[in-house]
Length: 351
Length: 269
Ligand code: HEM
Ligand code: FES
Image (cartoon, rainbow over all chains, first blue to last red; front, top):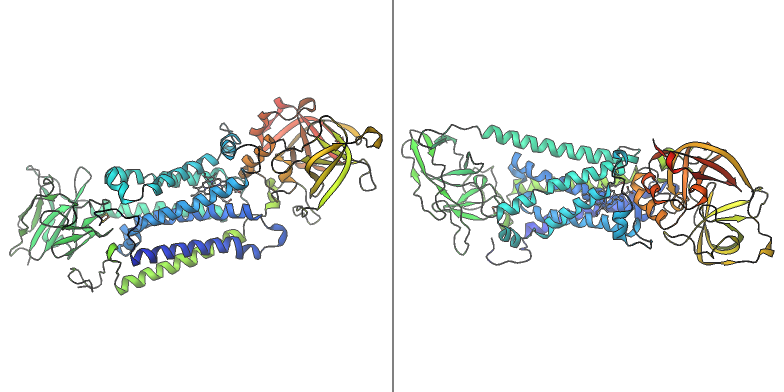
């Protein structure tokens, strides 16, 4: 939680996270450019520059696949949540590897010419009319530009400047970047591929990714089937017994947002399920001292009024609850930010 | 309760708070296993992709010259600097004609390029010249990469053009490549992935070659010339790096074939 901006708030977990990531990339590149070529007959070796282009390109693709797997994995199994937490560093590092790929291409394919590499980039392949020979480099360029914008706006400053919803939708374009990267390889390297390695990486990777997203969405869809709205507008949110111990019961609303109902001691409270930081799922957070801790980056909100404890200033909306027997009813209209709502006592019903 | 004091929840349900950087022992173990899997996985994938990557010389849609065992013909190592004297012709791209010898009874013809993706720096016109540079060689194709400026020699040197022999009109299937990469500068670069790079060479006046599916009069490649022997027009860039069928007059000049391309008869395969 920051009230003033620092370039990066380093913690031990972030350092370990980045170290593992960088070690993985180091291993990949060393295996690709150093160990594996030693196992090949001399005449079949690529020049070092082409080898580097392929190593960085495939590494960037692999990283992009991995970073996009984290979201659905965390939705399917909460133990993956810590990987989500530092995902922005992952993204920036992926962009750096993609930049190394692009620079290697510039220094080899687009160099040694009287023409400027920038002119060459746009002037050397313009066969737009032929699908079997369609220019594939523009797809890579577009993917890279998206990664660059996302990396540049990854800091909390931009999150607050753009507001979380705008930031979040901007960062959804990482999926467009992934699609463009698939097209880049499908229209490029695949066209001449004579072995299955790259196709397996690209189609295998994207199939796993799509499957994970579908599995996560299916799971959420099943959890989301809840009671209908009654005449007064209140929603049947669930039974007291449905509220998991120490966690929130997540109630989806018709407008696409959702509410998290928590039980602390013998009383229930409801706040928005969306963290004011990056829309993290507060319902999957934990309770401590009357506050909900967001599972993504650890922002805290008091259950009573949805406010972060001082000196922090973030706020989420509270919601009104009432009980009918052991059925929890929820008013889907959010209270104005900062409204205090007394927790409703369960009394005998929850025992 | 977990070891995070005051956080409600069953013991098995460890919770990680990002900024605190603490994870319980079970979660830590889980994350350590995930990290190890990622690390070894990345090492293996990198090794596997590179170890089994396509043989670059076997590119060209399996076109091009084959060695005795049916394998691709590989580029020779770059030779040292040589000084060569011969006749430079300007029919299509400039070609260096070296005098006939036992091995090359009709005369030996080299393609010419400059340093990088540029054509050679030659005196205007054709005629006897002295050129300095190193030779790129892959099987039957030879290209002199000219250093500095070629020097004109006077006509009395007796350096004549190699034998010309018209072979008639042909319709041929293959792939257009830049002569320098095909001769081995990029060991060799070919195909669609290499198209932009090849076009940059052609724009820089590196001669184009047409690598054929079937041998034509004993050769697996032809030097491409524009209609009437003029340089290739820019339309050709769209036809590089993909399977195409070309038509035109073929001529044998020394030990190489030259195809005078008829632009209206190019066909995508
Ligand atoms: C300015 C941006 C980019 C340019 C100019 C570019 C250019 C190229 C070129 C020329 C190739 C063909 C190389 C070859 O096969 O020899 C290539 C291959 C490739 N690129 Fe890119 N690219 C860019 C961005 C990206 C991005 C963002 C990704 C992935 C996230 C990517 C992934 C790949 C992959 C996986 C290959 C196949 C490598 C192989 O042949 O094994 N590229 N790129
Ligand atoms: S989304 Fe970042 S702390 Fe909640």
